[in-house]
Length: 258
Image 1 (cartoon, helix red, strand yellow):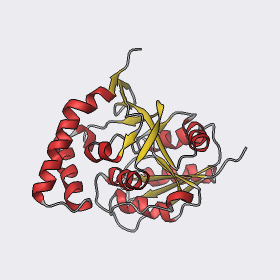
Image 2: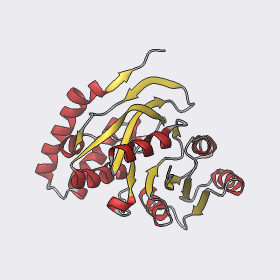
Image 3: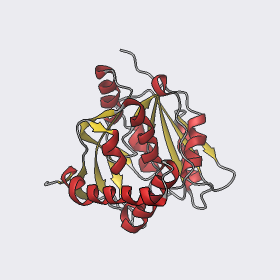
Image 4: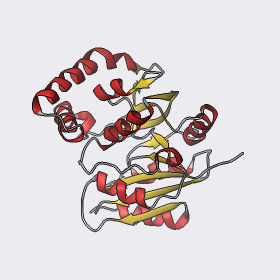
C-alpha cells in the first residue's frame, strides 16, 4: 500500500516547556512516512537546544532558525518552502497528536478521494490535563459556515499538494489558519471531517483562544484585510460571527464524561 510523504509544519517560539512532547507525539505516529519541518522564530529559551538534540536523533525532523522574529505566519511559510511531501499538515509547538492521527487521515483522504480533511479534537490545559471538552464540526462543512466560524483546528487540517499546490499562508500574525482553510473551502466548496478526536489542543493562559476580546479583534482584521471588506460590511460579518459563536457553535462543543 502506497504511503506518501506527509510534511508537518511546526513554528516554534519559546516552546521549551512543550516542544519535546509535541515532537514525541509525531514520532509515536503509526504512520511513519513523515517529515517534520520546525522553524524557530528566535526563541530566547532552550527551545533551540531541545529541538537540535532531537533532530540529531531522528533525521525526519528538519530544524531551521529565522534570522529575526517575524511571527508564526512567516515561520510557517519558511517551513512550507522546505516541504517535500504530497500532503501538508500543521502542528503547533504546544499541541499533541494521537498516535493514529496521520494514518486515519491519509486513509480517509484516499478512500474518499478528497484533497482536504480535518478532525475533531480535545482540549487540555497548560499542564496537559484534560478539560473534558471536545470541539466538533459540521459533517459537511461549507464555505459559508466557515466564513462565520473557524471549525477547523489548525492541528487537525491536512491538504493534498497535488490538488492545491503549496498554499502560501498570510503574514498577518493571528488567524492565519482560518484564512488558509477559507482559501481551501473557496475552491472545493465543502469539506468532510473525520468524525472523531485525533488531537489535543492546549489552551494556555495567555493564548488567543483564552482571550475572547483578542479573538474578536483579530477576526475583525480577517474580515477587513483578508476579505477586503469596508468597516460597515466587516461589522455586519462580526454580527454573524457572534451569532454563530453564541447560538450555533456551542452545539459542536461537547462536554466529555470519564
